[in-house]
Length: 459
Image (cartoon, rainbow, N blue to C red; front, side, top):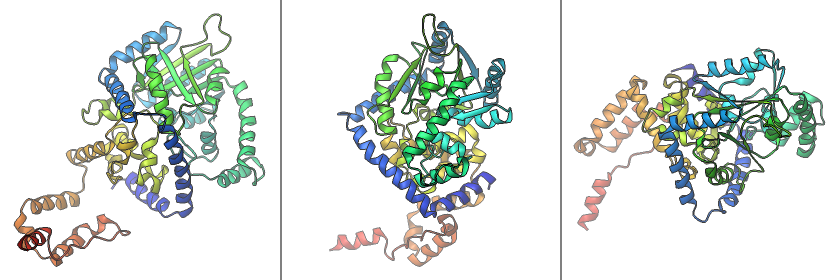
């Protein structure tokens, strides 16, 4: 077993039996569940809205090269610069080149899972460039020296008491500070960063092909300040973020907000069409968009799993997943956790190290039911498991058990001629370890369903 897999087992066990952690996460997800019911109530025909969004994204993914070129052409036309980054290493190299060109020493960042994916903060720190997260949740986990816990809610695992203790330790503020007082403290601290930053870095919720626009949506206004104050703005976006037309945003923005936070629409929605134009009073003097592949094309070339690239990063599947709710986001040890992360991470970071994530699921289908773009996530997890077998990554013990299980299940007479005692012994011998110490194996009844059916039919 790989070191990554062993760490996953260890971290999952620790978090699953940490009562305080589970109480905090379930409390926060409980609030989300209440909010999302309100957000989704704006739709009279929700399934129709989701299917329309899925159709649009399918169209993009199946013609991705066309839409990428269209976006690039329209963005460059307004003075923007597009950089293609096939890998994480290439993206970091290009970002550093831009920062060195502008002699940047202080960077402000708005919330971006794509920059988390390439470990940008750690990279900048190694190059002695200060990088400050400006989303409140992202700032909290940055101060704590942690990675985001959730795609949408980075500090979901922390209670207000945890945050007060953290800020007391790091900044000396009153340990009994209220959430309002802590927010005011961070706001004052970050405001100075905004006005002195050399470069602002954001992600992109959507890239609009027909206008060459970067679409950003957020709730705190920090994203707006990140690209407004500094003279240089860099947007880092995965190549799958495209929508064909600006008209599509009227459909996608409410879907993202209602599934992500339960709002009808986010507080701030912004379209960025390049650097400041002549006659405009604000905005960056230079704007770059870095189009990141980082093995997304590995997902794309798999016909069955490519639909995972439809994802709009709302985080709804995480909140719906019983496994995520118990083991938490950090146990996955990857940028994208929960069901969507379990599907795409093996492709993006290697099946040899991360194939276990595809098995960290009950296959209950809750993730598929909630998905706003109708990704059949539980089916994709099954396809991933099939990939594990085809790549020869299953263990010898698993192959032995499944081979014999298949042989027995295909021959009814073996089951009929074997007593329940023998069957229970076989279950314990072959599956007790894989079933886990915390679960009890089911007992097979003395009479099979077939035997009971024959008896009932005689009556």
